[in-house]
Length: 95
Image (cartoon, rainbow, N blue to C red; front, side):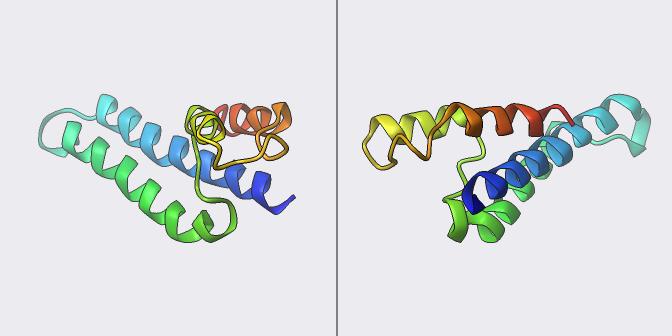
């Protein structure tokens, strides 16, 4: 149960901080707005923070498509890639 919960929080953090930066960029104007580099930086920092935080627990596959690729490569078992786990990713992305 630790792995799916860790993935939930990882996906939530990625969507919250990355998309939050994009929303803030769209609201700002002039010298106070952030540009594409700032949005990319927010996504990158979220991934790095989650890699350090949940990487040892779950491997930090915060994207179900990445998890599916790892499953196809044979580095993950089918019990770890379940519809419930994909559902947690969708739930986390709906913040």
